[in-house]
Length: 595
Ligand code: GCB
Image 1 (tube, rainbow, N blue to C red):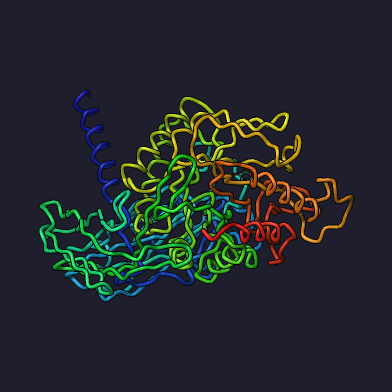
Image 2: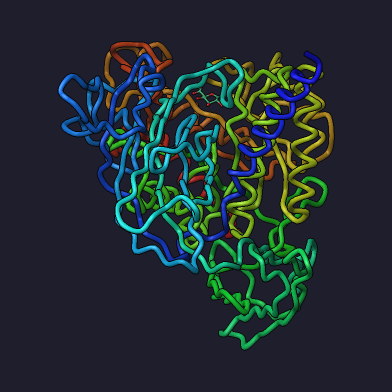
């Protein structure tokens, strides 16, 4: 009996290790790889009660005799566009939070000397992937990339990928069950079958050393059997070349100096960087800048910068869908530029890779965060592992984007010992993976009485920037003159107002404009005017970030007249109209000295 138990345990451990081995961290810079795009129409089975699991819908339904039948088929069913959320594609799916099976077939001329990876930009929320009727792996987390090596599983000719996607909420998920945005599910980002040489450049980190304006401190990592190779890193524009040899683990440190023109919001200079190994070459566009804090100031390239930011959800209001294309991203980021911003807070989860790349090209600094949001269960070790993993996946993907100046690990978490521990651990992960960037988290544990605003949550002091979400004028009325609010912080660090604002239903004219209950544009405009008055008198303020650029869909906004399923805190309505508050904010940003 004892032997039997040991055997079962050994098998269990072996299979779980095997399962973990299937998923490898997603490779860097997928858009420059040799790949077949699997975007486009996928066949779908809508499965609200998860029947496909026991019916094994990933198996081909081939009828072999007269009395056989199958109670599923991808043929003749609905189709879904990838990338894209499923909720916006059929009105019946508007609030769907359950399982959908996707299927795509593709033709491959398989080359025997290549390796193949099935790469997903993101799938919300849980995923299981099957290739040619075999399960190849699973992933949890709706906003970060993942990949599976399928070299031994793809075949020459027609291949079939089936993806189980489930966007149910769960108490141990990240985010957990309560959040204020629409839970867009599905294969929301690009899917690629990437082919590489047997040994390829898997990952690299090429950014300036902390505090230096000319010294690159990074690394390159190969994946494959030919681990020791000569590597060259060149920046043709400035005729810079650096040579190194990878060690027996395929790893090499990168360290060289050059006279860089530094990236700034006004001149977002990027260099073409070519990384060449003996068996692979990859090109990226990389910028160089320094970011640090000194007392209550944030310094970009050594110069004080005021963070003129705006919050953005990854949603195209015109399509009422997850922003999934370059055009969707541009609509949002160009509005941010027009507002006068030099920074965007990509809330409340990592946005698609192109969003970050386009922000970088437009000269927008980026605050990037994971969906560790409000109701997270920090007591649950599975949840903590999950958030740590998401954080690593986010940093891994965007670590070469100089525009990203802040990794943020959580938003409005409720104070507890477990919460503190998890946040401190996440801050340490950020600093270990990437010593040069700032680390923050947005907090709302504070009191506002007698015009005195007290931040009592001392966890804020573990971060480089104190980031506070405050809704004075909306959730809490002003307690005196806005320009006389007394701010009390538990430590002397730069203060960033990561959220403020209120709601208005564009054009609403239902009642007195001095009452919040009627959602008037004037009421919101006054909140902004008062906030700006307060900002002008806060000596340690390093930046502000209105909540939010555009009205966005949310299942928690129930007022049938003013909200109808939209959070109306946008500076722009869902139809693209600019509210009066927009002009208050843009005037404030434009009045600030050129940063
Ligand atoms: C917050 C949250 C944000 C909400 C916003 C609101 O504090 O961070 O996600 O949506 O308030 O609209 O109340």
